[in-house]
Length: 180
Image (tube, rainbow, N blue to C red; front, side, top):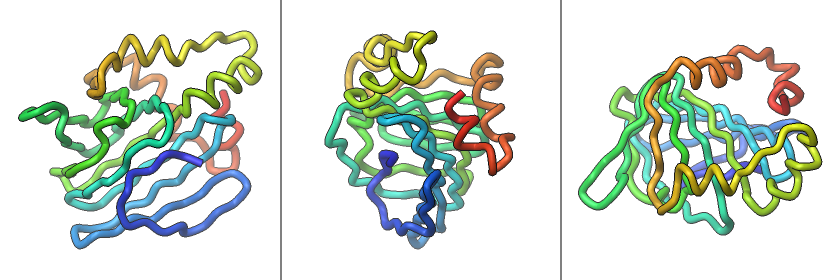
């Protein structure tokens, strides 16, 4: 299942199509509803109502994650003595190599979607699942995340068009729709 940051979490429910995690600290709580789309590919719907979280996550495999912020704001250390942020409409590409530390939700909420790729597994499964649609995940990683730092693309109408559709999918067809 998906790659999740290290904070106090509990599995609320688990089914064939998804796992729902609940996160808590003294500043609030959040949920992540995670779907396995293909082997090595997951999509998570993130809903947080908290001021911050402290992550101890360190990946044990090569990852590429795409985070889209629908609403709210997330601030995090980006480089030495520098911070970055994502807010409504922004897209972040990230290898999760700097996903340890203190993350702030200055508006006390964050809602968005994360698409996570376990590069080894996804590079094996995607050519079989998407036969007529070539995807070069390592090429995307090299283009946007050459070093360890995340890349943020601030709001554009084309990004909103792609990700906006994911938020309106009826619950009963989500596992099938996410494959498209």
